[in-house]
Length: 466
Image (cartoon, rainbow, N blue to C red; front, side, top):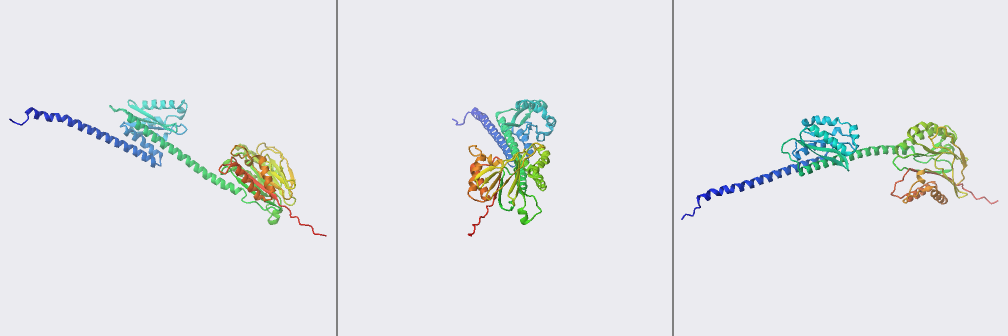
């Protein structure tokens, strides 16, 4: 009896194994294909992400977007439409692949007028117009699209298209296309932030230059005037401010002791507004005022002439100026003054221990060309203290929103003057009170300037016995 299997069993065994081996091989091939496709997609996305991290040219990055999008979903081509932040079509950044296939489409998109887009009501209408226009220009193809969104604002539209038979759109394709659109949005936002940063850097440089010029225009030290002490400080709310103070000799040709005993002009002013425009206007007025002082006219005449000279420049800028002008004669201790609607200076009278206001009628500089100004005068006594200031001091707000106000300034001035300290000590104490009220970590709302003039107290010698 033979142990060999029947002949039919030898013939059937191989035929039964063939389908098993073929199915396993097919599965392996499918898995290998999926693995290669996944690696390819990962490499495409990684290359796009690397370009985003390292790009210095937005245009170069956006050129890659349609190419990567088309390859990710194995489409025939892709189109990227980008908008400026204000909604205008960014024609320089229109991108498409393949170039030959999309040449006419690109020309038609570039010819799309901004007025036509602006006339549409809402973002959905703009998207509908683009979808319709691009679908028509691409002809008989399948088109899929997604929006490029930055901070909830539409910044573009990414399209992929294919006329290939058997092209299937899947959820994976949708996710890949959205991922490319999101990376594009990040690139656009980065570019916008860099542009903003560059503008701020340019502005900072301009402000630094303006602040340096203004610092040179304000006196860097107080002059020596016979019989008085002077102290002054300006603290701008921004790098460049509109506050102005000055000490101007009415006879600059004099030198030494004769210059100290001659009449001096003491000025405090404020341009309505802050920043560079206010600083430039005050610079212009400073030159005009210094020329007027040399004329030797009285305070009210100087303000009248200055108002007429500055009328045209201030009208163009739609700004006005407050200005307190005074001149002081050390030999007589006579102070003459006129006021163009500026905060009246405060004067502490030593003998009466009382604070008064120095004011005279007058309109803002630049408000009315034929404005008239009044004049007043006062004789200062030994120990008297005069405080010039701008409204940035009294209108400074504290933590509770309360203003520093004039009444509080009067109290602090009176307390400082009674202590017997000099002009610089009074100024330091007033600014310290202001800083404490506002808060050391808070910025002033407006420029704050103060000038302190203190008449030296006369030395009273004891009388000799007869």
